[in-house]
Image 1 (cartoon, one colour):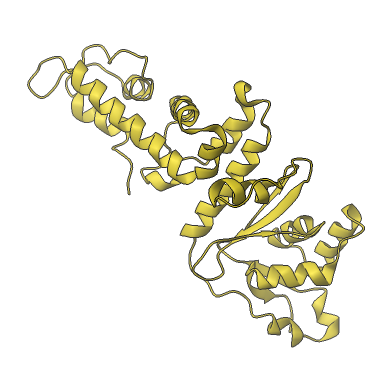
Image 2 (cartoon, helix red, strand yellow):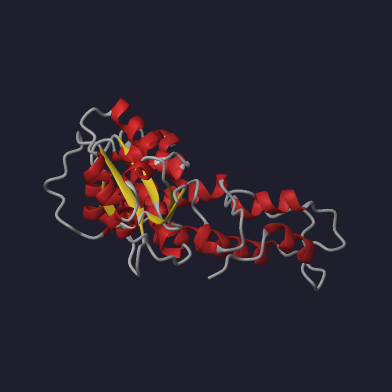
Length: 270
């Protein structure tokens, strides 16, 4: 599914022969309260204000629907009517940066974090980050996950120095809120009665096979995994995690990451 023509392309086609800048056209296109650009005419030379309004509405609706499909848990948490108004506010401030509609919304979590009316619901931003990571994982390149047996074949003195190749679908979200419980309850209609907002959670989002998985990480495992994703060796990543989280378990966390399909290969040995 692709987004409508970029505002500048439409401006060039519609405003040929008129002194209407593409920037002004773009701003008016995404602002439902703005008047049509002055001097806008159609191919017949007649004023095209009504046609512009119809096109503008179609563009805004398409972008809002894309957000609704990407962030269903947010829709459930704030309600349909509020989400429609919220998504329109986002569209006005965040025009698409790519013609591919499914990639629209990367800035939505940050927008929720800074949106004053939602200050009492600070967990919404991290829920949106998990949903955005879910979308990225769903569309990421296919790659076979690392076979855990590869590590078993290494000499003991090699293990600490190995570095892992990140799976294209793998990402981490660390939150002060129970993001996994909130996503499960509001995206997949699981029981929300037991969600405790005082419990922080970190998750691994990946797609080792056909389906996207969101896995709860153990204490310190997010620091460990993020270090590995940044290129640290196994020993370096473990040291970082232990420094921040004394109860970090290297064996359990590494096993979880391997079974979750976080990597595709190891480097720096043999």
